[in-house]
Length: 276
Image (cartoon, rainbow, N blue to C red; front, side, top):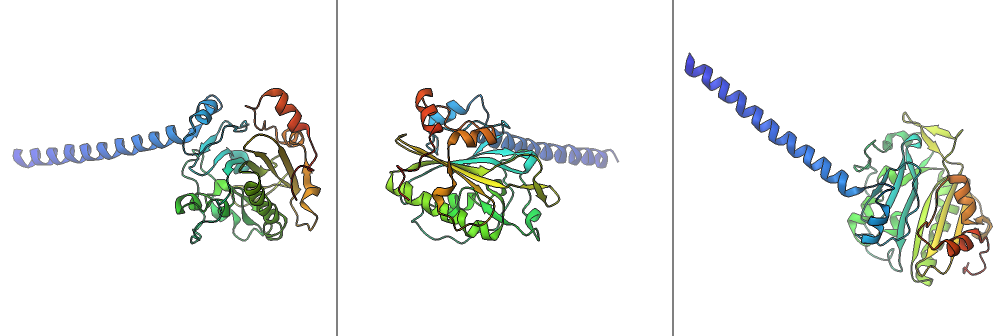
């Protein structure tokens, strides 16, 4: 009887020890991912200067202090609206000219601590999952391509808008990246009160989308504010100043630029030095 009890006791402690090992492993892994992929307002400068994986010296400010990095882009997630307030990335000539990859399914972003919106929110909503960093801009390898299919990188867009004027603008950005030897791109939807929502998680549907671009040599800047509806208007009709985008979003774009240069470039509304 004593031997049987001893055996039971031994098995119990053995199972407990095994469970503890696996539990500790899970915690360590979670902590590792969080520490290496979360950027907050206090360490953005250190991250940018390190040029780790993504060379981007001029990250925007974040209104949520929830900034995360993938290998191909960086984003600031806004849990209230269940999408990113901005996605930032560098685009160089040829980034879109590599292999064709099979489109994966959309998935929740494993980096977002509060969990990004589930793809099911879009089902039967009447809206497509509109990319912020286009999949077509990340064809350097399959990993970068598949990263763009996280729900942190999409926003509800009508099919007509997504395949129409928004697609035209994405193509123009690629053209400029080649012509001007690389761009910094920041893009997102304008998130504010009284927006339509979809799905169980109330994913907001922006009424406007924006893109802010700066050449890598920091010689010029341009901004677009596009109403969420398809349009056949020329793209230059949607240009505005970066200051205006900052005013309506509360985001400070390219804050590491020298102040006098930043103020001058961001106030400029002219598109004349951009080849349309």
